[in-house]
Image (cartoon, rainbow, N blue to C red; front, side):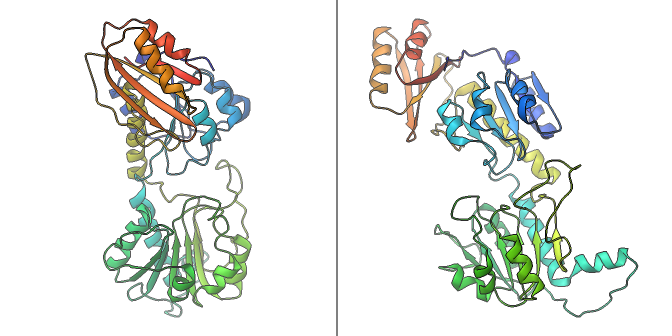
Length: 410
């Protein structure tokens, strides 16, 4: 792959898809990036390839699929921003092999998702979804039958990361008892209690909420066996990933009255646009709250996500910082005004660093600072050299065996 040269900021083309918030555009502008093209929709096929052909940075949400083939057709692309939590819409190993770090916003919509979970918890224990529908149809279901308070109930949280722990705090404020299970040991918030397994936790819970990543070990983890372990009459909430729950098994558990209800925000197959119909076996099941993947869809969250991801992209472009990249060596770099900064991205194979140091020695470069970090596949080295250094150094670094790309940052 040909190495890419640095460009003046006004020539760096930023492509933002899927209606990314104004805060991202404003953040790019403050950093000096004004060549920003923003579209309200996702792109597919040749339309996506054409749009990426001139892009140096691209921002997507959850719909746009950046496959290996799509990335390979974007020769100028130097960074990807996922303006959301998940990054499964990007082929991360392929991006790394092409020297493209991928950044996301793992924390910015935490509060929005947590608040939705508590709101849906109230809806489920009060049967508000069905009562609301009945009132719209002219039926008056004024009854306390089947309605409960959250206070005193036990909430089970599967996955105790940033969102799960926020849910824990809010649930305790409602007077709930909180249990949680995570495959990684986590410090409990408040009075929450850790459970060693789902088998231990599920039978104790009046409500169970899922906050796990998309991974091989979470795919279809809530199936008929796990649903049968849940307390009779309990409620299930899924605002994590669509493939975590086996939907047909959930329908069976609801129709048999083993579960009292469910709230589902994510689905195995979701419409690609608002114009496409939403199909699910859950549509006609009583006391089921269905929402269109809106856990993080608040104006506050989208504003924060726009700022967070745009800042990571400009920091990488301006200074070479990769802190927060999900597929790339993480380096946080100081700013050095009286120096040239050169970056080299290479395959992590033996001998590359010795070739880099040899190139530095042969061009008589005065090294002010050198930073190296690697993953199993990719190495990332940033070199600060004196301003009197020969321009030939970059050419020599590009010629180092295993180099994916080199760039002069400033």
